[in-house]
Length: 267
Image (cartoon, rainbow, N blue to C red; front, side, top):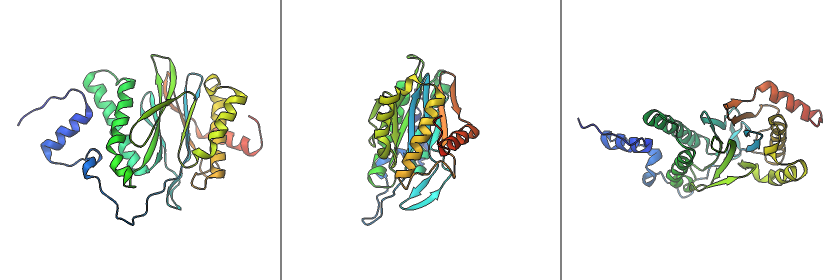
């Protein structure tokens, strides 16, 4: 039996496994991606995920609703997911397909760290996400796998949090203060500008203040977008990344903020 060595690229390892075993890996076989029937209805995925900088890191908040067309399929979906100790991804779109890519990215980051005895660089992580989205493009264009992620990272070289968003083809862009994705995001884009112009940059404010702003923004999105879950029946997910790692905001803290908003408090 022939033994191959690999350079540390998890994608190359998967390709070698596919060649040796004949097992098809659909995520990385875009040419063979299934095509929808001519009259097939496109999937509609409603959500709102938000990424905001704060002093020393990045906060991610997302609703829990997963929809297909006008039906609520699931109201406990976790759309803010850690990829490693200093990376968060917020997903909006085809939830099942997005989770496949998330699992791949987690394994890719771990495989690199174990094989190279060092964490993957920030640029390497960004390229890995771009490659996964590019491989998924045929599914997205076919209407069966469109999703748009927001990547939030702590950059040790700059000692700050950074936010990157992507288009469907895998092209990436960095945003200086905030990012949002999903069907409700367009309803609140103007509110981001209003907050930064009247209250100052998010990146200069403490986590507690930014968390309240994020939950309020999510509440506004839910009011204006029927596909975005609210903040009352099911509490949103909130996680943040900073120099110490990735952390989840306790439900009790979120519940107190929601109650304050409902009581008309200014926080």
